[in-house]
Image (cartoon, rainbow, N blue to C red; front, side, top):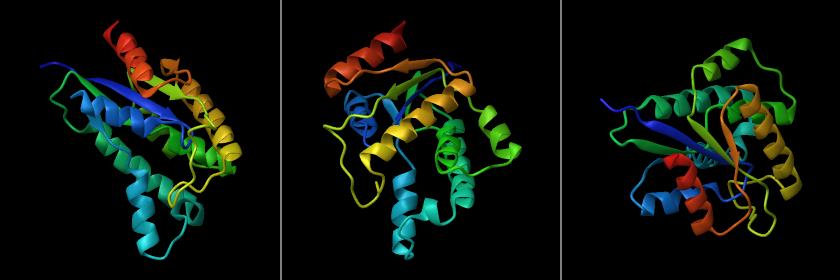
Length: 178
């Protein structure tokens, strides 16, 4: 049986992650989509405007559980790309200054992506919407926390520069094929 390479696409809010995932899917790569938007929309339907900020610890626990399940799902392709990862749940807790237990840290230690592509904050493409409540300045701080968390967990990080979707995908595929 072949082992799937698990490749993460991440970065702060509004940095172009989902656009890259959509392009990779269009090119017939196996991709796992972002989970948090669904949780946010679900919370809004129940009258919670910002589910993460209302109960950050329980929201994070649920998100870690869902992203871990997504990560552990049996894949049939040689490469799977993930839109956001398990570890940045802790980066968001760090961003708001909330202390968390070693249990969450241990859960994150069980997950290891083969490569982590991190997208920088990019004001020209940043858009706030009904699920993205952070300002661009907050997005920059979150980006820094995401970088720190993947460094802390000793992941292989590749920083993608601001460029067209097509050029970013080409850059990703060059690294993945090496």
